[in-house]
Length: 125
Image (cartoon, rainbow, N blue to C red):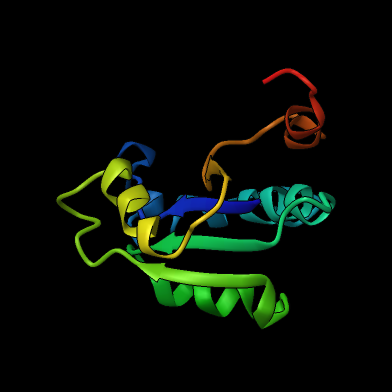
């Protein structure tokens, strides 16, 4: 199973403070960003083979921030049309990379701890 994280949006509803910074890089807990928390959950799941992150807005800031993670852990997909197209377009860009089952997450949504683990370990189809 692969993981797809959508992180290309401009965060227009966040106001002026985030016009120069992606929402996913908002620090919220012990100096960790929302994206850190998402990646930490995914890294605890043995079923995850590859992690793909769709980036667009301020992508260089995301690249720079995620340098601390091993390169093999993260595969980037570029959405050059992030300003005019939404999350569904970002998800479609991953179609040529993901050939197996996958879980899709938004990089700017804070999930309760262990939510992804509980979801993937659920025996129900």
